[in-house]
Length: 167
Image (cartoon, rainbow, N blue to C red):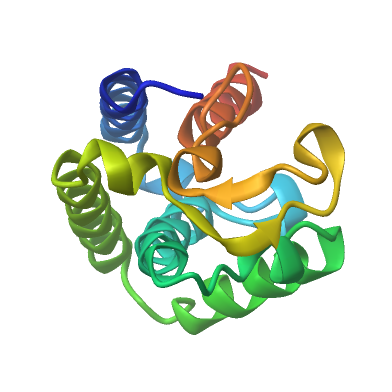
C-alpha cells in the first residue's frame, strides 16, 4: 500500500514541475496542435483538471462503497471517451481559464488527500475490485487510485510535453 504522505509529496512535486514547464512556454507553444490525440497544451491542462475533479469524486464514491472507476475507466474506450468529452467541454475556455481550473482542482485534490484519515486512505469500497492489470481482483481503495507505478499522471504529461518541445 502506498504511503499517503509520499503520494502527496510526489503529486506536489509533479504539479510544480508542470507549472514550471507551462510558465516557460510561449503563447504559440501553448496553442500548438499535434500533441497526443491532436491536443494543444491547453487541452492537456484541461484533461488534467478534469481528472483531478474525477479523483475527488471517486474518493467520495469509494468512501461510500460506490466505486466506479473499475467499471468506467479500466477499459481504454471508457477512458478515451471521458478524455474526449472533458477536453471538448473546455474547448472554448481560454488558456487562463483552463490553467486556473487545473490549479484550483489540484489544490482541492491535495486538500482532500491531506484531510483523509488513515482509515479513509485505506478504505476498500465494499466488494469492488479492479478488473484488469496488475491490480486485477485487488479491492478498490482510495490509495489504489494513486498507484500509477513509476510516474504520476501529471509527470507522464510533463515528460511528453518536454519531449515534444525538445524536437
